[in-house]
Image 1 (cartoon, one colour):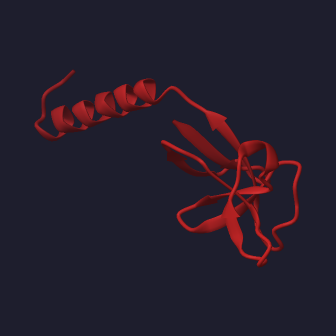
Image 2: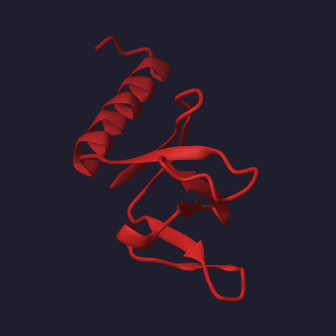
Length: 92
């Protein structure tokens, strides 16, 4: 899994299984790209500059970091369990 974080303020844009790397194609539209030739990423149809690039005018710059998806899911599962127990009035 990957976490996409805005460089300017550290806001997490999102977490995803795959990264859609992009660049400008010959027509001037965004096209998929290999990581080494990408200028940005697209997440939920929104383009973002990759750190070190500024070719996508008006777009925020992000950093993409690989994360352990299993650990994230386990932590979220624990939080859900705690919420259910709390709603039922059961102390953990």
